[in-house]
Image (tube, rainbow, N blue to C red; front, side, top):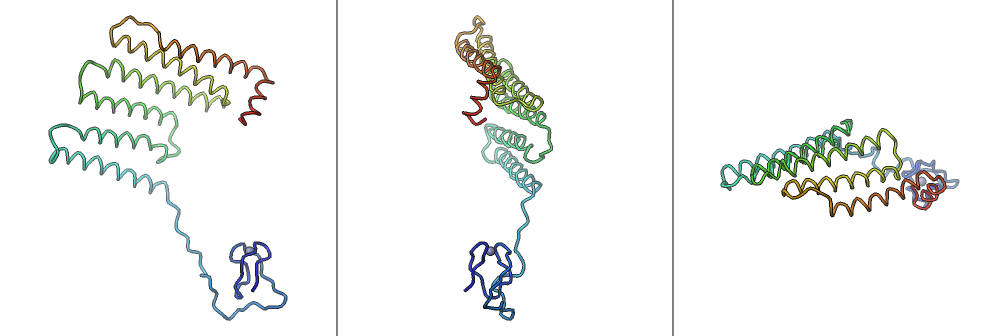
Length: 233
Ligand SMILES: [Zn+2]
């Protein structure tokens, strides 16, 4: 019985090289058996790796068929309400979310913008099915637009400025504060009450305090290095 000198795997007497690590087999007393058939197949059985195009086709087909089948069910079997529009809209939205997976060269900003438009359209479907007090144009659309804009600003900041984690955190907190204030003002306008900030002021205060601390850390090199060392960033 022989063993590989490199990886220690047990070797068959027909082996000239180790089947695991390809190290040459040399046994000073035994000769390699060149007559018996090798217990290992001569060709490696590899399966082709899954291509991105296959995933794109598979997911697109599944989403499209789901949307079509639900549409038909709604038309001919479970009619009465337009429930299938939720499913069709959801399938479309999922497809838009998957665009960066399908097309990796797709621009990040463009895909984020399309995500925002997709979410706004999905709320639009809900607004068509539940028309009411104008919540869509007064609340949903501005909130989705504000969120999309802020995420885009963050993406541009990180990509173009090669921002560190600390400066990225400063921007996120600023955006969270602005977003919270925007939501409160929009709700006030929607309800017809006096516009002003109350609960969002608490969030605003917390963000300002944490941002002030973060900016101080960034500007003081000794503090910055200490934080980086302790937090492994
Ligand atoms: Zn080996």
